[in-house]
Length: 108
Length: 114
Image 1 (cartoon, chains in turn orange, purple):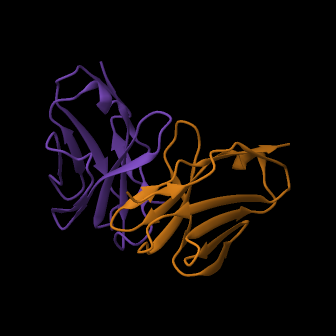
Image 2: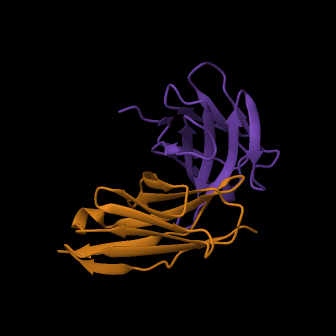
């Protein structure tokens, strides 16, 4: 069974702080890694994709991948109340497998 | 910006009835997917579809499920005989470049089986 694990949270950070979200996966053959944001009652919205070891930055978001440790993370700088949502880690092997998500709460 | 669309937004059906959920993928995308999310649970892969064929399916996608691309724009998921446990959000997604690459999700259809 290929697993993607995330701390369910909630992770509470003050406005303007850095939020750090983590994900581990079991399938060493995984090739592609994604972060989605899901507001309550809505569909997953793609935020970041990362395919190789290291960091990838896009605006306030940085994704980090360490294949040796089977670990993916997402950093959100200058967190805003509108970032409050559930963040889903998704890993592509032969199918896209989602973690259960981390609920982020950004307090004004 | 192009989006995946899904209809209906909410479908209520009785146990044992057939339902068809419809999706219009992003127009230049060739790879299509269905996922479901039971309330409070993970998003789960059901099936992937490319070149008019199923390319991958999960254990959830049993004989009661089928997919079809009936024309050049629509992609459908049929559930032949619905069960109470089929109640969930069903998301369609599409990708331009394939399974390894970004997938974009539609707004979902909430299926309620009574």
